[in-house]
Length: 445
Image 1 (cartoon, rainbow, N blue to C red):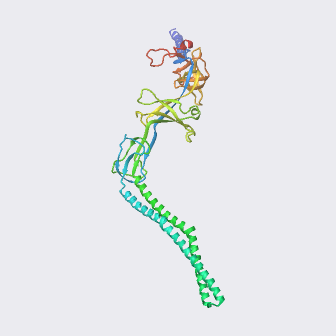
Image 2: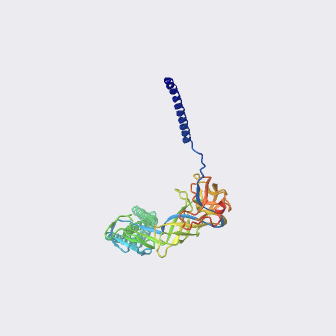
Image 3: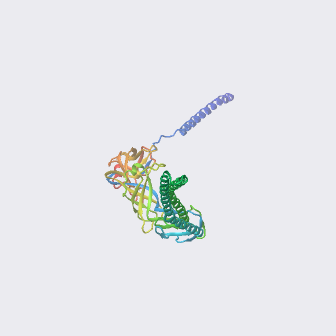
């Protein structure tokens, strides 16, 4: 019985263990399933704080802005035409000079000697010319006239003698040799007359003119050499071609300057020029005399300027138009080479719809848009057509109305559909909403 009891108890214990193991396995599987599953939660969209306001309407004046560097009204980089040591300077940097003022002299004693020698040759040639034109040529012409007159008289006499002896020979009063002698003398007289006449005609038409030209040519040659030598002396005197101020003088007295190298730079800084390059469409809206301002580093207030030149041709490299703005500088406070930011007044719009320029966004394709806040507080991109700009605000030709709420700050690279709220800009001490003046905050809610 005991044996049977044990054999009966063994299978009963094994069955109970199997049930417990199954229950534990089921519980473990349920725990694993519970651990692997995640509860579904709703994550709210992030809300971005921005600054916004309604577009405004009012008068706008276009501001055309550009950067430039101040240039002198006129400039002369003076270079000598000869190479020589500098004998003396008469000016320093900062010296004010007038037109034609002597600035420096170069060593020129050899040049002065050469000029003196050529002057002597010129004076001698001038004296020779005077002698030839006033004495020698007229005397030669008179001599030729006298020779012709004498030859003509001898010819007439020989002809008369020959005719007389011819009659006497016919009458038998003289022998034949006398007639032959008279005829030979007539032939000689005729030849002398022809020679004198030809010489006279040559003197009148050719020789006299040639002699005068020869004398004149010699005189001009001597004069040219003298003037050339004198020019070399003049080149050794450096004079200013403009009135202004000396801005550069790199050498000292005694140093040698090479022909073509800048010795002294003179600038007229009584007025300065800001030369800017503008697009053709922008430049066409300007006119000479247009008012402008220039912001200059170191000065609290912008200085007045005026459009003085609009180039009649496009720059071939940039296809822009060069515009000059003239800034008066009588007191010399402004310096050449100073970078400036210029603003030129352009078109005027009486009733323009405008938004802050910071609200305008530019796409990669060049399109313009703004981010507008809907009644549900969601920002949407809205394409717009901008007009003129005054530097702070930009005119909107189409795309928004005065009832829209436009993001002016905090919306850079914002995606469509972003939820926003209107608040103060980061760093504002008073923490006031940016659009409080328009009530845009209340509208966005």
